Image (cartoon, rainbow, N blue to C red; front, side):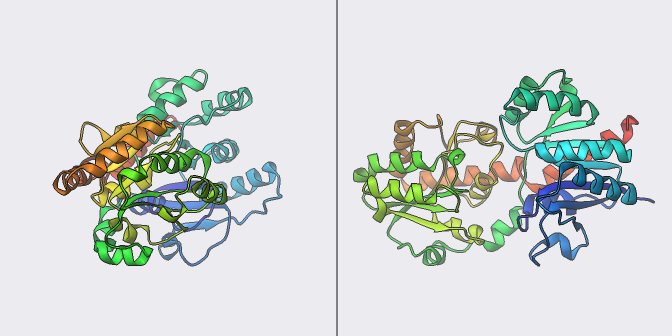
Length: 373
């Protein structure tokens, strides 16, 4: 039986991507899915390479959009996938045009964040191109609602929600004990750790975490903040910590490839974002049985559901974040453990990789059976 061929189009190769790996390797044997990266070359770290599931076009960044489209058209005519699954806006634009000229039957546009239709020009481009897409996938219900409200003429049934999922097995296998995790971070066993993971960029809201921590530090003298990640705001955040007089209580680890091994060293996970689609870092922290404090933005409330796993706070609200930090800090050990157990159960029930892959297969099946390609 001939397999249904699916190509995922990704703009840049930025290293091994567990979510993409799962979307490609987690399908049943009726499907042959591959990743196609427009820019970037293999580095020996991509799991998809060992399965023969990665294609690197390695385009020159200076090449025109027309040249990229032409390259894609040649590839699609040669490989003849039935479904082109495009991730993010620019790739959707390039992929949709290439699909039209290559007569690829189905195009899926996968939207990973909020407010992607920011300008009138973007809205016009979407109006022209999205009529040629078969389906639009949002990573949360709020993202789906945002897509429908900011684009012209989209039928509601054309936009669906697919929650991100994570493989909880690595969280089990790589989660070390607290003592070893803290040794890897150079944090003492006696300290209470408010931890955060994410790119150091404006949308992640780390400046609010620092500001709120500075206001409650006297009430939790054994606490410190550990921020895992790197990005354009690192120097600004380090300067802010110095200006607030908390630099001795804040650790910036920089980029770490062993995040799952470090999470057990946290006492509370904090996600102070001002914009999110659906945070994988949040899911990983919950899988590691951590209580969580997170901003009420994007798909985050959907992750919380009705479970008691921590606290949702308004984004950018320093006072509310500080109160939540102090409240969870003050809980006894048993109550904090219960929040973490609830968080883990929420991932097992709704945000595991098997659940996501089953729904993705259903999306592909509905397209292939529709006969509208």
